[in-house]
Amino acid sequence: MISRPAKLRREHFSLAIEQEETAFVPFEDIAVIVLNHREITLTHPVLSACAEYGIGLYATGSNHQPAGVFLPFLPHSRTTRLMRKQLDVSRPAAKQAWANIVRRKIENQAACLRLAKRKGIDRLESYARRVRSGDSENIEGQAAAFYFVQLYGAGFQRSEERWANAALDYGYAVLRGAIARGLVAHGLHPTIGLFHDSEQNAFNLADDLIEPFRPLVDLHVFKHPPAVEGELTPTDKAALVALLNVDMEMPQGLMSALSAIEYAVESLARLYEEGDSELHLPRLIGLQPHRLEC
Image (tube, rainbow, N blue to C red; front, side):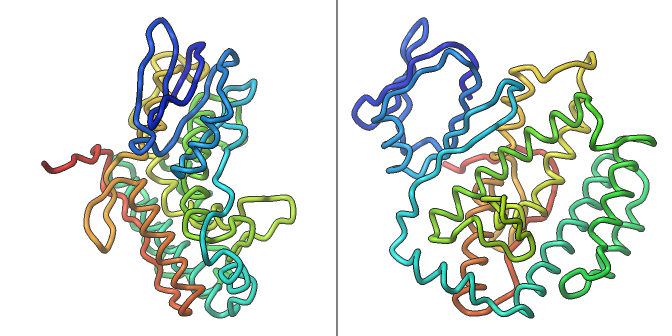
């Protein structure tokens, strides 16, 4: 994340960040870049490198929330075929996949309450068991209304202008962009969702897959309240971006949230290719940063 005036340019295989001094970061080591200052300039070769290396480039708006994301232009050899399969997926398969997503989201919300030492875990676990194909009873909405009040206190509303909501929005936006990046890299079109289907939303499918990842942001925001109520600081934003490197549990083992997104997207591609609605979805286990074994 870049939060001070800078010029970004491409230097062979690295991103050069010109500030008081010039830092060089290999493009192959970058997954996400967040531009968080109005006096950042970048060259066309930087954008080309982001497309070439599959890097998600975020720009923030006047409120310093992520306002847009630059993604590679569908460089996958199976893009057209997968798009047809997305459009032709059977409703039973899509509804069952959505139920699996909602169930894991609510299970992770229960895990969030447990890790936060808050009450209401049993009720959320009961909600998760009640989810059926397509979530026709809107158990997701019922669980969310109960969950946020349990986590953040009586009277909490997501529509309020307060630090916690700004932090949640920022963290969700980072996850959403990372998921959109993963979808495009695997040849899937982010616009065509399983459940979300707004004609005005270019990220319907990302908004489907993000659901089980949201409690990771919720837990971080609960565990790291501001010393004084106010706007997000650069430190707050850097910590929210760093959640992409926090461990989550997948069927393949412990891995960073960013890697978990990749495996989840791969399982989603199998849904379209093979009709397998048993998606590989993350389990929330805490806020431990992922450690690479040497």
